[in-house]
Length: 130
Image (tube, rainbow, N blue to C red; front, side, top):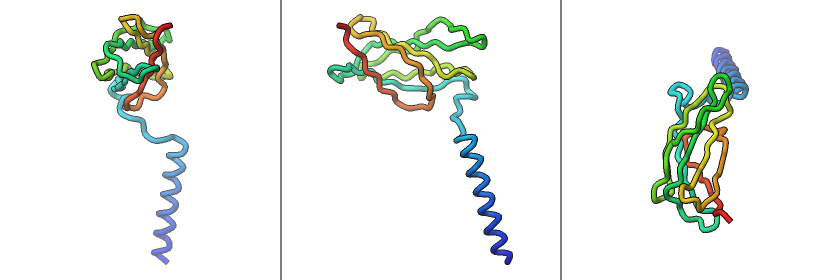
């Protein structure tokens, strides 16, 4: 009888934990504590698939009054088209606004809003200007 009682307790506890995770989700990464989200980008040409060197990544976040701050240069891609940046994280904002610009003016500017701040490599393809 005691064994059955222990089994039922274990099943009940597992069920409660499952419901908690289903309601509140998986714990978020530590970016919320550090205030920055490390991210890496690979910039490619949309027509050739080749990596793009020298593409500048600008970021803008919103302050507590929801006013946009001036965009700042976060980084620039290397010869392999890669760039690793730390994006400031602001509570209660969907995500930072990012802009990818080609200083050589060969590729069109691309704007995006990052809504998922998990660390991973994000591939961005830029269109050549017409």
